[in-house]
Image (cartoon, rainbow, N blue to C red; front, side, top):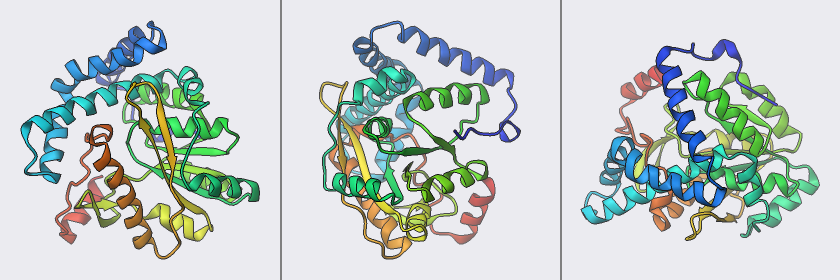
Length: 309
């Protein structure tokens, strides 16, 4: 079970402690409610409090970047939906095993399911690529409980106290987990080469990536998933958990594996897949990241970005 090593974690500051205690208090209070009430309650809190205070500004900016002519009424609607999904996902993940139990009986669909079953039977590595969409831990929990060996790659948080709670919670949903960076890389590669299925999210800004269109706009995108798939003869499979109208359940769809060609072509296919999902359900993607930052194609700016990130 891979965890981030303590020597690479930031030191716990007073600000970190206050932020962690505040977030733990909110999550702890909401978790006093039964599961069916806590999830919509956290969605309401995110819509009405977190959205106006902290979330909507970035969502609006990203929407304007991608859809400059979008009406204000539609922007407000999507901001509300994004905040709601963010709040629901936050409390679902912090519900740990209760969340895992909730999604274990979902039946995945799509042409990629048979490919996963065959790869599992043959011991062939698989790289599962999703996005910050719906609740990306729903498919990880579901597939793990269906008997697949699914490991997860995650980004450690900058707040060490919050990170400890976060890792413990997502490990209770499914394991193993591997922190992004050198400390988790060796374990991750061993797991993949042993025939494991590695789950990761491919919609992060990546300073050392390639400029690949995402939602029709160039974005620095990691090509590492495609490179690993080719190097270790692994299937490269996009998949998504889309929240259903009841706000509590999901549909898990596993797309057909992406053919091995070259890393850039395969990465474009991943971005096209994720873009199609976002276009179909714009309120379920986390428009909260600086996905398109420094995407002007300036090599010098790119080098500065790589040094600073």
